[in-house]
Image (cartoon, rainbow, N blue to C red; front, side):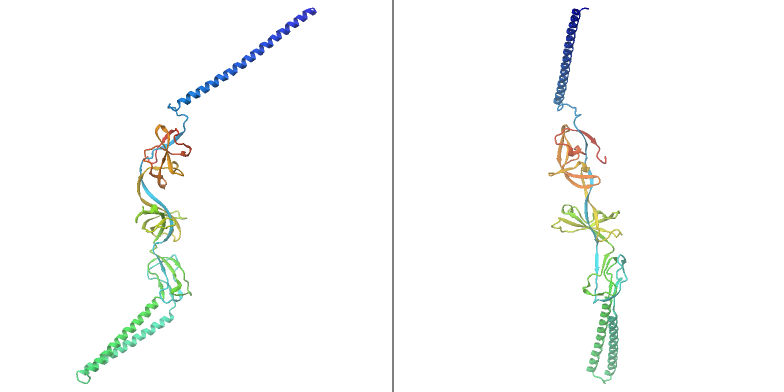
Length: 396
């Protein structure tokens, strides 16, 4: 091979290499444009699909994108209406006992608070050493008066025998008769004075006016008491208690004597059954509360002065009953969401009644046939389309 041949060969290879490089570059550019075109077509297809599905959603039956909510048709139920109240336990008939007589030094107190006492039982005794001597003196005065009366009667009897014989005039008989009558009167006066002293001495014993539970004892032996000493004992007549339940004026008009109530004192697991025996006729002008007095039989767990809760029966109502989760509230008041026509959410204002373990009574706003959103109503908007899922109402 000569020099010219090599040049020619090299030149041919250079041309070939240039042509191959140009072909490769042209193929790479073509593939790039093909990829870009394919992506653009895919994007256009997606946009067209979304536009088509978006236009069809309002008029179609496909609600796969709408949220699913649980609804309930509450119906109407006969409900035992209840009123919840709080108050203080007290003795239904509390009897304060103090000094009735002139008083003096207390010598004995034979009872303790918490004990049962009977009517007339001695609660405390006051020293009566001076009064006893006065009573003995009065008793002696009665005997003296009786002796004088007997002597006057004897003188009159003798005079009557002598007047028949003419030894004594009729005037003397009249005088002796008057003397006899005066002596008899003095006997009655002496007896009255003696009985008065006995009554005064009896009042030195402080006694229970009626049977009941002794709540307080405010006196000790050696203490000097009198009319100004105040209340020495407090007795709950018959041991009967009551709850002074404070009730709103709107609920107070629903109560009447005889309705049943359940009372639960604080710290006691037992609930005690009683009944309203009096509804006080006045309302506190500041708190707007009245008092319903619930009578209770004696029980160790009922302590006067203690705090208690009461559930008072106030008749029956026929109304829808909803769980608390279905009731919403805002500045406009209480409301629920119902599912109306075309499964769209509607707001409905309601008036609620009492709350119990079964739910909340809806006294106004619902007739019981609506589909009410049971839960998560706070995440819905009025007019929103939903997929309702019916749940049976409680009790069905």
